[in-house]
Image (cartoon, rainbow over all chains, first blue to last red; front, top):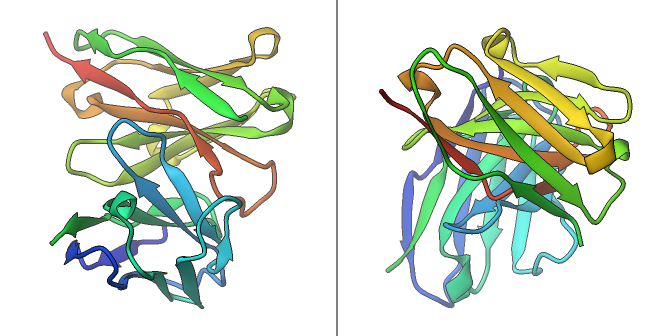
Length: 107
Length: 120
């Protein structure tokens, strides 16, 4: 199985700031990396897929980059609703596997 | 709008089985894969398997072979996952999630999750 390693584990920031979350695959997954947001009491939300394609309805302050083994999710100008858990997931091969998550907290 | 409504929390005894559901609405149920994903407290997410309700085809993560059984009822647009021979390791939140039936598709809609607690 492809191992996905996310960093940092925790991230504290203030509204208006920009942050980046990294995800590293144990082998090349081409461009097939997705990012999800998880918040208590809400369904998980797909933000980015294919490494950099913004899911419909997701604000443009979210962006993804990378290919091969190294990927980054960037959130520009943080809004209060952006705080929560973020997971990366490779969708290149079965079984799909997830990173361990990054908790984005209010500073 | 697409919605995946999952059944309520379950408290079950070790050694027993449990069947949880995921009712789909807002799209053609038989035209998308339905996946199941496990999340243990403090742990990450693990993919269990998928079912294609259109023809009942399934694919499982080897790790969950014999543990999880996926079915779907086209008449009610509901997917089910049965977990058997439950142990404390099966205590987790279980999500259903949809994808287009293509290789390399992400999960574009998720259910709210069902907490299963295995305890005597």
